[in-house]
Amino acid sequence: MNDIKNEKAKCWCSRLKKMMEERNYTQKTFLKEYRKKYGGGTQANISRWLRVGNRIKNGKTIGFPSYETMINLAEFFGVSVGYLTGETNNESFEIEKVCEFLGLEEDAVKSIKGITSGMSIRPFGKYMANEYKSVLRYILTSSSFIVFVKEAREYAENVYRKKNPISYMDKADLKINKNVLKLAYQCMDYQHIVDDEYGVIDDFKENNIEPTEELLKAISVLNDAQGYDYVEEQNREHRIKLSEYELQKIYFEIIKDIIKEENLPNMIIPMQNEKTN
Image (cartoon, rainbow, N blue to C red):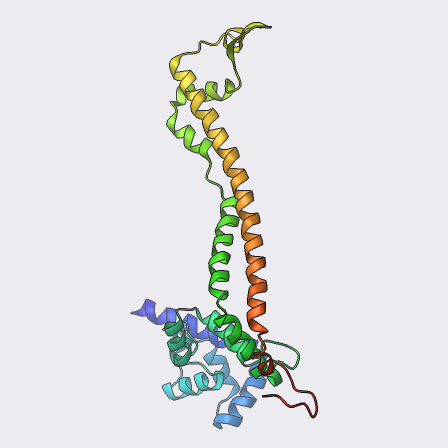
């Protein structure tokens, strides 16, 4: 139980400090605003709230403030007490329910809210919240948007596969007896052929190497793997270029959906004396 309490204390201190920093509060300025709203609190209180769980000189541990104070602090920052203590990673119950309904993480939900409120779009975004909300609505409801999401995922996979390719040569190494592997690599380009012009070409004989059945099979496996790796590399490049083309094409299809005649009035700011539907 002590471990759980310690984790909650660490989370409390970390998140309280973070929220103060995000709002550019010092302990002094925070105390001033807190007093305005709740009529109490001292500099010593603020210091203790930020050091919950720490040991002090007499060996005692600084405990959590009263539950009433915890509620006040949560309300002040617009979050839940559960968020401050680490019981949830969602700042509020409302966000938690939205995240659950949409199946999105909190940062995604906040990003959407930032657009629909206009607060994430500067300057003057908050004065055009309805217009930005309409743009987002038409993007999300565009018949091409689902295709865009699908293609974006495929593009991400293609880029990942290019950066983290599956190596057929590595797989081939595992199939070959270690006793002949090094020699097989050395002999990958060796030939044993009869040519009408040059006669017998025998690289094995020239290098005093016995072309055993095991060695020849190992060389064949390596050469096949090398060929597969080359072909796959070319295919990866092709798939990435194709994905980029598809994404660009779908992007313009979404734009066409957005700027349909019936949508335009909801996305513009009327000029003086201009009437819109």
